[in-house]
Image (cartoon, rainbow, N blue to C red; front, top):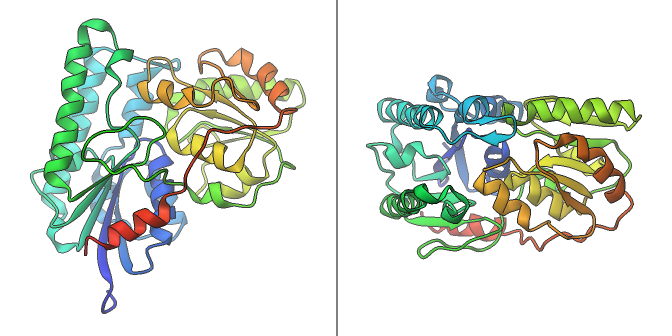
Length: 339
């Protein structure tokens, strides 16, 4: 570590690649820090392709994205069953035990946790820390009525634990607010700041989990049969640590309704077909911002056969994206203020 520089740990969620992509953009602006990463799954490869230093414990941790995309989400629908939910909880708890046994949180000047749920269950607490999230409640009204009270209590418990453990709580979402969480705007990715054109192929962005693979295969087959040039990126296609050039050149995007993907869509002003996963509260809430806007269509992920027709329409429209505020510089300043 160079003299005068902070030692920072970024603990980034392994649910997809959106978290690690936005955290990498954040990290590139932290010229005052030496950064080490804690994550798992495809996020490790993404970071290493960008020359980042990954903590050795990362390779022993399970990927939450694989659990969510493998058992909790099937056929583009969230499975609200005890088995998959317990599998997810067990995976988080197992990772938390690895953190407890292998990561000295107190050795870092600042720990930044981006929806890294393991640090809410860990027995260790950082000396100074920030918690980043793109949602501050679990939208209980979207759940099956009998479980809504339990979902509301779970959301309360998550916020309370984050408030107990972290000096700074940052909400970067495009919906919702909560007391005790600073909401300066959005946290963007490198892909969102690349100079956009519309001269390339359609990009089908399935994200970093296998949840959208079946839909991606069907969409790709239909686009091929119609002679529409396209490329599939993410866990179901071309997995790259630098998707920015593909996204910036794309003529349009077909994307799951994950936060980072939709922020990229809004900032680059690309026409897009947004594919929310059924019963996925974040996807439902995220996609609301694009409903009824010129240049965008929202189609259930499971109804992939409709995507091409909607895509052909938006290709000829002038996109009117929802407002997005790049709060990355403000967030970097606030993180440095923890030192």
